[in-house]
Image (tube, rainbow, N blue to C red; front, side, top):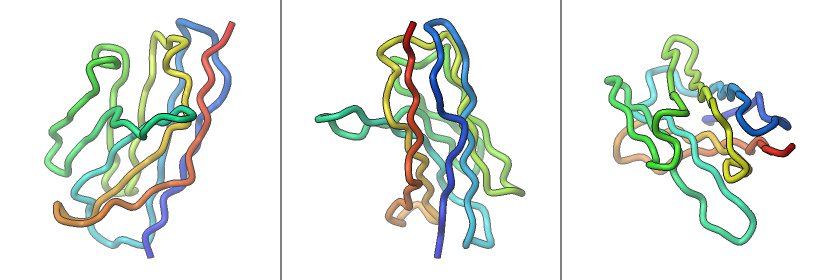
Amino acid sequence: QVQLVESGGGLVQPGGSLRLSCEGSGWKSIFYSMAWYRQTPGKERDLVAQMLSGGSTNYADSVKGRFTISRDNARSTVYLQMNSLKFEDTAVYYCSARPFYYSSPYWGQGTQVTVSS
């Protein structure tokens, strides 16, 4: 059973930085995809950043140049470095992982990020 545990959320002022971490367990190989999504009340869960096992990345336009996704495949861990945070980055951030390209995603429990002065 794959489990994902996020950490690193919190309250930060505009312009500040946070680093989210997500550690996966229950999968003995390298996840094909690890990604971060975010969701605000009443809205759909949107992709923030994704990194495939080969190293390719994909970012939402709204975070390009400010957020960086990285992975430690040996630890089945994915990180999201968030810089120059804005009010509109406030959301619950979810970690997602897929063992294979055709797999349905597994999800973490979510971590709250609040950008407020």
